[in-house]
Length: 243
Image 1 (tube, rainbow, N blue to C red):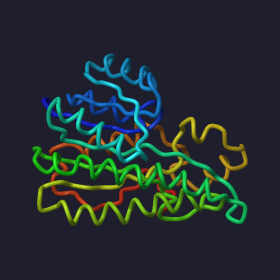
Image 2: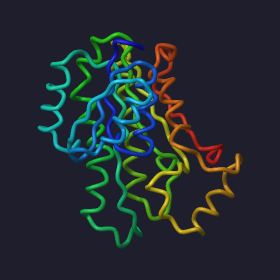
Image 3: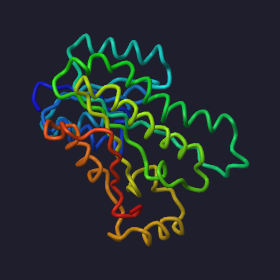
Image 4: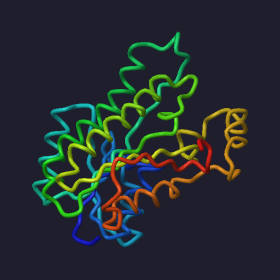
């Protein structure tokens, strides 16, 4: 996959970092996106250690003007072949006490942000060889989860958007798929109460939590030329938790 470029949002840590490093190891030049300057420094170090190349940009993906300007800068340096929308936030809380601000913030990043990134790069992807879009969802987008009405809504919306995009962009050769991680060991899950972790583990047939690399492996395949006939699919990486 040499001479190809990927853009990965939420690449500063966890699943996003693992995806960025995996794609770089496959020979892609990876543009790593995070919300703050210097946020992807460790990711770039890991990419270099894997023998790859990359660059980092700070971006608020919920800001339409900022996303459009970012896409112009990236595309000025050459075509983009792969877009991975991984950036996401949580603002968990009971539904009856959830504020408008917490609901809107999660949808702004998780769903609107992915929409803006897809829109900004769609035309360029349509002209690239073997173009790929992979949106990182969550199993709760398919199953729901108490205390995560906003998060589940954003990830469910991502499924509908991705299926529609797969149909709209398929004629141009662009594949669009959703990867739904289950319980993955990241900073986002590390702070959960032990009772929650124990209950989750008991529901997983493989009897272990996943790692970011488990998700990156599937994304790596979907971004490859071998996955050219896979589109509009929702693929869970969850140890069998939702089967």
